[in-house]
Image (cartoon, rainbow, N blue to C red; front, top):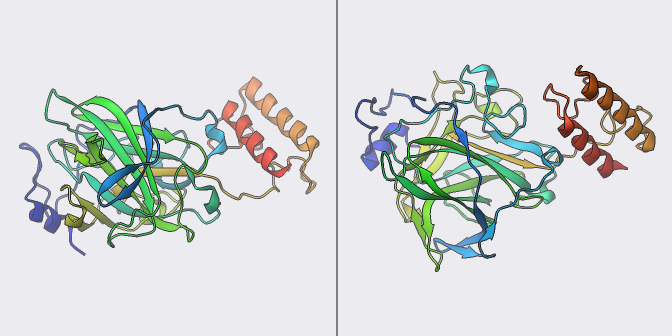
Length: 351
């Protein structure tokens, strides 16, 4: 497997003047990235991939996120979102808050990459993934410029560093013109089954940064972009960063997918120590029908009494501003309306 140093040397890429070159012993630095800014899509299209082109399965359509975030559960996290709000936070105790690693403001690429992904063990695989959170640094055409930003997100059976198979396709997401020099993140919510998951629970996700897709489906890669980087739970992140991902990333910055390179993102002195392009997938998990959610009265039966039991616990905590772990359905340390929606989802599934 090639190192980051060999990969960069092969492409002849260095960071901008004033920043250290990324060499074998150098490390990515989160300078100037801040904590990122959220952006929302303007329009989306469901696509497959064939012979290096997007095959449109739907026309472009206006983006409208489904309303029930509480009905979704994290099934894979290389994003760092322990409180499950779709925003990067200081997971793993790395002391970076929402700040993330990257290769500096003057570095371009990879413009497409694939990372392996193993979802958490109790994921309901047939339900697919409903949401995906991503983060990237957008340099566009240089300082003071803007460029149309289209991100493609796909799932597949193949794993790095094998060739991409594009078994399942995915989505093109158009954010319109984005100013250069920004660390952006986005919560892409489409609803159940938006992305197909491999039958084994292990495969990969593929992300491409584009500035256009022609009417014939040809990719036009962005002028300059790079994924922000973070780690999964068994790759040096927090124990509750769920799912797993190894250090290998298949990536490239040329229009030909055959010109991809395999790079290792293992950095022993970083936190997390093994990185990858930031992504988080949401879906459905088989969390059972016993326990306080939704069997609130603990009688091994889910019925109307459980709903009234939880309603009382949640209402008391919510109205008084006190914390009751039995009301914290989402487990994020806060009692809010999302907990009530979370309970409704679990209750409806078991009633």
